[in-house]
Amino acid sequence: MTSTGIPLGLNWASAAVGNWTGLRLPDPFPTFNFAVEIEGLLVGGFTEVSGLESQIEMQSYREGGVNGFAHQLPGAASPSNLVLKHGLTAISTLWNWYDNTARGVIQRKSGTIALLDRRQIPVMWWNFRNALPVRWTGPTFTAGSDEVGVESLELVHEGLTKPLLGQALALGHGIADMAR
Image (cartoon, rainbow, N blue to C red; front, side, top):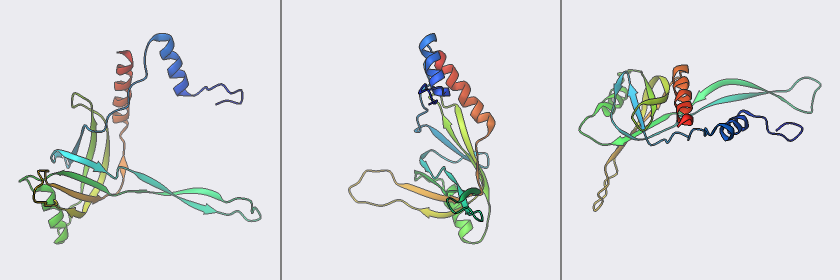
């Protein structure tokens, strides 16, 4: 909002162009369609991925003689642990990785979490580096239940990146949706 009260942001401009041209803003991507790849291998169909976040720690600095406020300076970025959940199958790839780590056989792995469109084509993705499993959780067994057993693996990692190519593809996908 400008001092005159007229909204002049990018979203406002996009909406105005859409009204004039008949184009509409692209819909947000749904999050139910995704894939997880570790070291180049799709490691199963996951029901949930959480922890896709990073936070910059702020440092407070008081300047001598200026007592009215403190400068807030950015520090290091701290990524959260990733938690991968999927239905229990006979394939034990994630358990084996966790078990090896617990026995001292350390093998850090990098991977990708990709958001897919309705045609199963990646529209954006995030890469994580040098991950290591720090927690495995097995299924809960309940007599009388017909739910699928779910295992989860928690990963500590050295950071997330969102490659420029993924961002460009997402933008192109959005522009194509606007033209429909």
